[in-house]
Length: 85
Image (tube, rainbow, N blue to C red; front, side):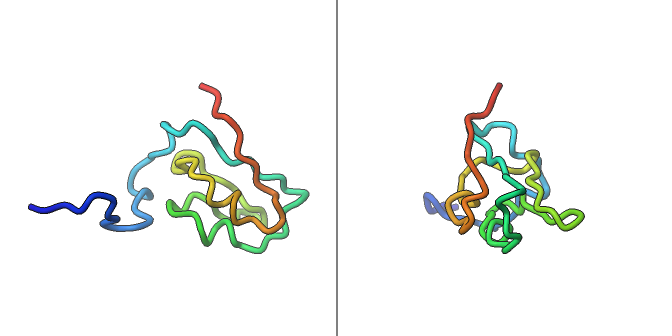
């Protein structure tokens, strides 16, 4: 069997597994700054961002702390903070 290093076999597959317990930083959403544009939900590779009761919520059971949501947020409503252990 040949495996290519860095290959993604199946994207957005963490829904089957809680994979968020090893991250070193986590996104924190400022709901007052959020414009509900959906960009964070769109770019999250692990589907950890959801809309619940018209508010964006980050599911830390699945978030790996990659920071894509914070990087892509046009309102700068998401800040990456060091994870407390």
